[in-house]
Amino acid sequence: MDQIQKQLLQQIADLHEVPQGAYNIRANGEMAGRNTTENIDIVTKSDKPGIDIIIKAGTKNESVHIPVILSQTGHTEMVYNDFYVGEGADVTIVAGCGIHNAGDEESRHDGIHAFHLAAGARLKYVEKHYGDGDGNGRRVMNPTTVIDLAEDAYMEMESTQIKGVTSTIRDTSATIAAGATLIVREKIMTHGEQLAETNFHLDLNGEGASAQLSSRSVAKGKSRQVFRSCINGNAQCSAHSECDAIIMDEASVSAIPEVTANHLDAALIHEAAIGKIAGEQLIKLMTLGLTEQEAEEQIVSGFLK
Image 1: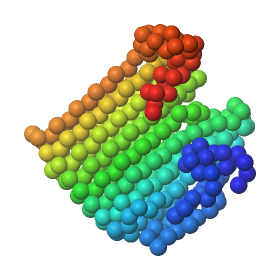
Image 2: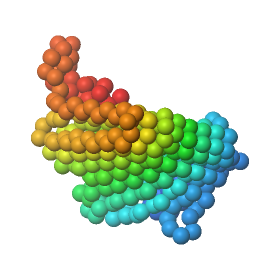
Image 3: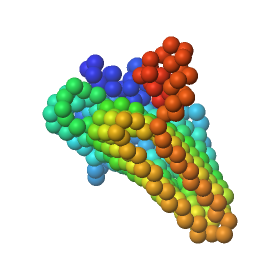
């Protein structure tokens, strides 16, 4: 890999060298490296671009890194990845996409990740999206995440996009069986004329199913953000959706919740708060010697931690 690709890997996956354990690195549409373990297999799909990640039942304390990097201007791709997490496994998957575009053509990565968690499986999934480059070409990422949680499965998802993505539409759908839990934490920052759209659709189908959605975002410049969440409680279940956003300059943010209880004992809550940085926060930091811009940066950084 060249230096630009190494820098992208560092940004999206905190990788300074080849990771331990299982990994699959994709660069400009080609496999740039792969390793499997006794418990984790990675297989190239034969019918379309993408891979199958197969994690054996009972696998504990192992991780999989599957970063994608694009450094060729004008490169576009659609990738399909399926993750099969066996019964009773407890693993971490680190994904993410980085685009460096130094040209005038659009570079785009669209990915569909489907997660199939067997009964009692546990998964922590971390993804980061990042863009840079001094060209005029757009950097576009459209991740789709499809989640199927069997009984008593647990999935925690952390999704972060804080720099350089011109446009993104992020779709996440999940079906949650009895006793299963889904936790999603999302962090987004946009600036300039960037667009970020997030769509969640959750079906809680079994007794004791639960979900927590948390979105924190900052919109600067003339950027636009839209947060939509649709939660259907189809059994005795609980779900909580929360959207907190800071709006600055001439940006706009929309929060559009939809909760539907189809069962007497479905407990569903949505909260949303959108507003500017409080004046007293700025004043307090400025009295400590910070400029207004430095104070704003400190507040935003703390908000997105």
